[in-house]
Amino acid sequence: MNTVALKQHASWQEILASTINSSEELCRLLELDLEALPEGHPLLAGFPVRVPVPYLSRIEKGNPDDPLLLQVFPSIQEARHVPGFSDLPLQESQVNPASGILHKYHGRALLLLTSACAIHCRYCFRRHFPYAQTIPGRQAWMESLDYLKEDTSIREVVFSGGDPLTLPDRSLAWFLDALADIDHIQTVRIHTRLPIMIPQRVTRTLCEILAKPSMRTMLVLHANHARELDGDVDLACQKLRNAGVTLLNQSVLLRGINDSVTALESLSERLFSAGVLPYYLHMLDRVNGAAHFDVDDNTASTLVRSLQQRLPGYLVPKLVREIPGQHSKIPVMDMT
Ligand SMILES: *Cc1c(COP(=O)(O)O)cnc(C)c1O
Ligand code: SF4
Image (cartoon, rainbow, N blue to C red):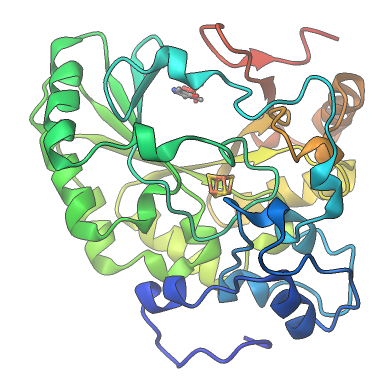
C-alpha cells in the first residue's frame, strides 16, 4: 500500500470501514491537480465518492487518465443530460414479483441482498436505484423465499445488490442454507466486485460457506481493467477455486478505460492467469450521469472482432446489451 496506511492484517470489515469518501482526498492522496467536486456537491448526493484502499493502491499517482481512477473519480460531465439516458434505464420495477427479487429470465432469479458496495463506480446502472423500497428485512425475505419455493422452474439464484459480499458471513450462510433446502435450486451465483476491491474479504469462513456440497457455486467478478488484479486478488481467486467455486468475470465497456484491443486483451489474459474466465462484456446501461463512458455499438463490435482474432475463443467475452423487456441479454454482434 503506497498511499494510505492501514494497519497490517486489517480485517476486511476494517478495510471496508476506511474507504476514501471524497474527491478532494483522492486528489491529495494521488497527487493530482484535478478539479475535485467538493463534498456536499449536488452531483454527489446519493452517490458519493467511495474507494477502498486496496484499489486505491493500484492507481498510478499523478496520472489523471489512469483507467482505475476514471472509474471512481466524479466528473462534472455527470451533470450532462443526454437524450436516451435516464435514472432507471433497466425498468427493473416491472420484473419485481416479490420484495428483493428480480425475476426476468427463465430459470434464474436475482436477489437484491444489500444496497452497499465497497466502491462506487461512476457508471453504475443502479446509481439511482430505489434500494430503500426494494430491499426487504428478514421477515419479508421469508415471504420472498416462498416465491422461490413455489416456482419450480427456478434452477439458479443470483446474489446481487449492491455487492452481496459486503454482507457478513452469517447472513450469507443464512441465505445459502435457506436455498439449499429448496430442491429445484441447484446453483447459486454471486455477482460481486469485492474479491477485486478488498481481496481480504475472501476469508476461510467464506470459502467454507461457499463449499456447499448440495449446490454448485459460481462467482462472477467484475473487473474492467487488467491493473485491477494484483497478487492479493490472485490469492483470493485461488482460495475460491480451492473451495470448488467456478470463477467468471463480467466487465463494462467504458470509454477512456478499456475501449481498446490492447486493454481488453490484457484484461482477458490477466483474468485467465488468476483462474478466471471472461463471461460478459456489457455495453453501458444508459443511466443518467454516465453518458461520457458510452461506446457506440459499431466501435464495440469492431473491438470484439479484433479480440477474436487475437485470443482463443474462451478468452473472448460475449458482447451484450441489456434491453428492458427482453428475455436474455442481447448479443451486440448480431445487431451490427
Ligand atoms: C443479468 C441478469 C441475470 C443473469 O443473466 P445471465 O445471462 O444468466 O448471466 C439474471 N437476472 C437478472 C435480473 C439479470 O439482470
Ligand atoms: S460494484 Fe457494481 S453495484 Fe456497486 S457501484 Fe460498482 S457497478 Fe454499481
